[in-house]
Amino acid sequence: MSGIQFENVSKYYQDGAGSKLQILDNVSLSVQPGELVAVIGPSGSGKSTFLSIAGALLQASSGEVTINNKNLNQLSPNQVSKLRLDHIGFILQTSNLVPYLNVLDQLLVVKKMKGKITSADKMFAKELLKEVGLGSKLKKFPEQLSGGERQRTAIARAFVNDPDIILADEPTASLDSKRAFEVVELIAKGVKTRNKAAFMVTHDERMLSYCDRVYRMNEGKLELVEG
Image (cartoon, rainbow, N blue to C red; front, side, top):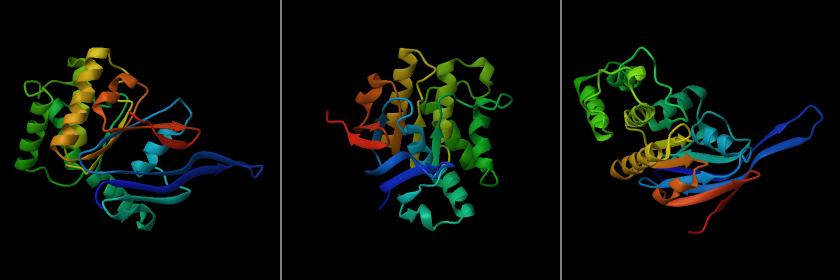
């Protein structure tokens, strides 16, 4: 099955006294290509841990996470790293752009991690930047961009390896309302037009209208929020 599936996923830590700190508690859900799913909830509820497990950055204590029919439990560390590079695109709270790279090179440096950059890679990167409204800013550096433009660069960068999964961690946290709506609209549009499976962790409930489904995380449990 394509997309990403969580099946009875739990995450916990043992402290020195032998007691268990439960972060995620039997989380199950499935996100298919073309779906943008939001996860909301208070700080400390387990959202960041959930996203880290979805991004293959953290291993579950129990249960199974499957990305495009690949069970993460059955992969070696090298295979997990390759899966993360090839199949997952990340959009973080801050754009995390490289200060000395221009807008186009922010995307091409990701392609370079997979090997030689081709002319097709450059064309695709330019196409993505045009889609997010940065077609005239390819040679600009991060310090020459607004906060919204930096985050739009980060969105294009998340799509540049043509990943199957997009994970957005509070992508509007540093933006005003107008820029925040623009950013989430761009993410939603990219997910639909490019047929990606996407999670967005957010505190900003104004953005939920762009999402296909909304889940609330509370004390490690995930519950569907009825519309």
